[in-house]
Every structure is written in structure tokens, then in C-alpha cells.
Amino acid sequence: MSSEPVTEDDLHAYADGQLEPARRALVEAYLAAHADAAAAVRDIRAQGEALHRAYDGVLNEPVPSRLTRTLTAPRRPPALAAGIAWLACGLAAGWLAHGALPTLSGNGEAVVAARFAHDALRAHVIYAAEQRHPVEVPAQQETQLVAWLSKRLQMPIHAPDLNAQGFALLGGRLLPADGMPLAQLMYQAADGERLTLTIRNAGPESKNTGFRIMEQNGNSAFYWIDRDYGYALSGGIGRQRLLEVANAVQRQLQP
Amino acid sequence: MSDFATDLASQLPRLRRYARALTHDAAWADDLVQDTLERALGRRWLFRFNGKLSAWLYTMLYRLYLNDAARRRRLTLVPPEQLPEVADPAAADPALRLDLRQALARLSIEHRSVLVLVALEQLSYKEAAAVLQVPVGTVMSRLARAREQLRLLLDGGAAGAATLTRIK
Image 1 (cartoon, helix red, strand yellow):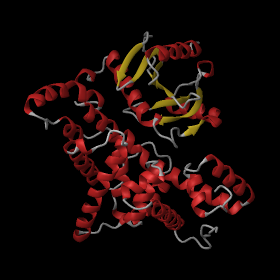
Image 2 (cartoon, rainbow over the protein chains, first blue to last red):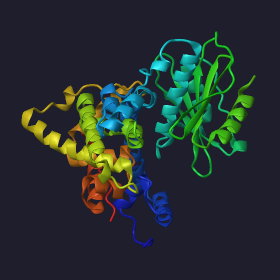
Image 3 (spheres, rainbow over the protein chains, first blue to last red):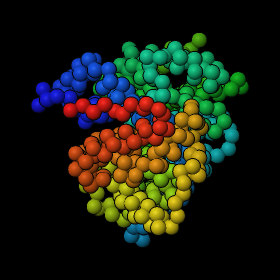
Image 4 (cartoon, rainbow over the protein chains, first blue to last red):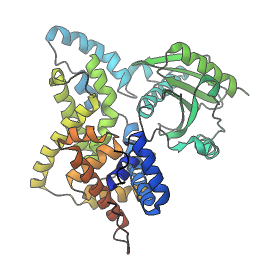
């Protein structure tokens, strides 16, 4: 089958990452020899990236409360409903209603840090699952990536090297947040497992803290403050392994 | 919240992006998402657990969108120039973004939906075919036409805009 001539459908499937490996190799050879076809593939990909730029912002918007209420409204048998309504107060709000979580209101340091960890975990779940555009700037442009994020956070940041822990830098993105933006660095293991390190400017008055942990739906985040930096390392690799990576991050990022 | 509702909750950001790209109207998009959630909760036993939850939700939302769109067409037509801005603090290039949204809004529903499912929501061609209830071959031909039309709209009829080379 793989020896059939390359068609326009092949170019789309190639650009969409939906070709079998054998066919993909054939198309790659074809593209190397046909500049017009290669340009067409670039156009297709540029369009996809433009779509993501136009709509990915929706992923970071707070979910309207009427939608979260739909999920928590009792609609099951009455005996169950009471329990669910009661649970809804705490659980549902925790995952969904960003900013509306009763225990995360206020401006104390622990509250701000927990809200940051919550944002970091939420962004981890959203972007780690993205197959084709998990990062805004790829690791190939690490220097520019770090310079850009440093500028936006108004403090020099560094991307720790986690290759010894089995995770290579994939790239990063800026996360919109209330007030100060957040930087998200994404790492990937050979098996595709992803971790994200989220960094915030915690301000000059921040006090160092040890590791704290937040967990949601099988994902964990260790978060801590080191001088002016707030960090959150998020992943679904289990607490113990994540802690080992968090230790490596902390060791590397210390002065 | 039940496990199922928690699963639905984790799909919310992507469902909202999908609905926003289909409708270009934040309020309408969230109405569609809400109707989809209610339908999913009411029909949860129809969901096969070996299936992909996102694809099931996309399918329901797409049907609701088709119904709504047909009803709205009978009422009013909003010119794409008057479509509201999408709040998007992360976007780097506002000029490009607006053009792209306007261009996307001008595509037919069939072309817009296939492009949104494949290029934005990253569904495989087979999954997109299931959502749209058309054969995979139709997904491929619609996708090629949608991309070509979007490209022409974005080029704004620039002189000498080369059409995508047809290879046979």
C-alpha cells in the first residue's frame, strides 16, 4: 500500500500527524523533492497554529458557575441527591469554580500559594493532554523561551535539566492569571508521560517554605517558595516519583 | 460530585473552546455546553465506557449546534464583522486573530466543524467522522476544501494567491 503515489489527502494526514510510519516516510521523501507540496504542508500547519492562538485562551478562562452548577445540581434519586448536594459544596468547587472556592478566599500567603498550586494543576491537566500544541515555544528555542518568560515574570527564571530523572524539556508557555502571569515549563519522558513546572513571581517579601502538596483526580502538585520564586511541579506519576523530581528541581534552582 | 460528573468537569475547558470556535459567541457557546452537560447527565447510561468521553460530548454538542444554527438562521444573521471579541489575553497577534475568526465564521457549518474538530480539537479523522456522522472519505474531502477556503479568505483575495497544488 505504501508504494501508492502521494495524494493531497496524504499531505493533510501528514500535517495532522495521522499517517502510519511507513506512509509517513514515503511522504517525507516526497516533500523533500517537491517544494510546492512542502509549502502546502507548512500552510496547513500554520493554519492549525493560528486556530490554536485564536481559541486556546478559552481553556484558561474561569468556567462560568452556571456550568459547574449543572454538574452539581441534584438530579439523581432523592436519597443520593442530598449527599451529592452536600459534597458539591466542597468537592465540585475545588475542581471547577476557580476563585470561588471558600477555603481559597482571602490573601494570606498560604491561600495565595494554594491558589497558585490550584492554577498550576488545572493548567497541567489542560496542556499536558494537548497532543500537538502542548507548548507555545518549543525547547529547541530554549534561550528565547527562558528570556521571554523571564521578561514577562519580571525575574530571571531557569529551566532545570531533568534528564537525569528521565524527563526532557519540551518547551513552555505563559499562563494568563489574575495579576502576575505564570510561566509553565513542560517536560516529557520517553514513554510520553508529562510533567509541568509552573513558576510565579512570589514577590520580595515571600518567605521560603517546604514542599506542600495538592492532589486532584490522580494528579499531584508539589509547591513551594524559594526566595522570590513560587514553584509548582505537577504530574500524574505518583507522589513518590514526583517528590524525587521536585527534590531535583529544588536542588538545581537553589542559588 | 459523582465520578461521571467529575469526568465531565475535566472536559469543560475543551468543550468550551470547541463551542466557541463553532459559534464565535461566548454566551451561545456556553448555552450549548450547558445543554450538552445536561444531556450527558441524563443519558449517561448510553455512554459506552470503552468509548472516548470527549468524542461522545463533541457529537452531542454538534447536534445541538446544528439545531440551534438552523433556528437562528430563520431569525437573524449577524455579519461576521460584528461578531464579539473573544477574551484572549494569551494571544500574541490580535490582528491575525480577528481575521482568522472572521474567516472561520464565514465558512459553511460543514467546513467549519471539520476544521475545528481536526485542527483545533485534535480528533483523528475516524473520530471526526463519527462526530459528524459522515464517512472518513467525506471528512478528508471536506477538510481539504475547508482549509483551502480558509486560506483564500485569510489571503483576502491577494493577487496571484496560488491555490493549493493538486497532486494526483
